[in-house]
Length: 274
Image (cartoon, rainbow, N blue to C red; front, side, top):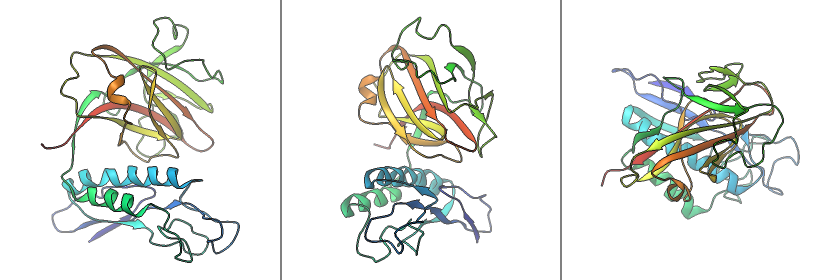
């Protein structure tokens, strides 16, 4: 058996014909619950959150990646962990076993989806993983007003360059344009001839750190923390209504606090067997 640990993950180990590939630890999403910790201060997780809602969103995003990995040969994946352990507050339950940090029915449904057939992904807007994609961008501390709104002249003074944008080469990144300021705002247009057959819009994204994504001025996703590779994240319910035939605008804002940094994003159609 080949056992690897990756935080936050998930991660697909190298598949070989003679060994079962297991993700022995992943996740590590931390949330201290007041009154139910081993110590009042100094608690931590591999990624930390301040609300149950943000924790649940991150947990769901990780679980969402597993079916495609199972389809490619992943034999098992073990979330870290069932309960908080002393100051390590990444348990499903608190240290005293009194509080489940997720709504029980919701967590059951999120976990059961792992056992369903994996989706396929049809590219709508490619990332720069393989071929560099051109963006207009601005990096200085400008906080451009309504940067996410369509407009032919709104970004005419912005720089033009290829994605991905980043610094210090985070794991899994393809840095083609250096970005080393706290914030970046980027925009690109794309054309669609038809949208009738699209099932569910998702992001193909690699982010480090907090990111907001907009489609034709509508926020379709917000992520926190970072990834260590490209992942697919379902867009929100507003995304499909924002998409249109003809020219569309994809816009992204990413904020960085420290360490390596990176952003690249595209759109996919998440398709399930009917």
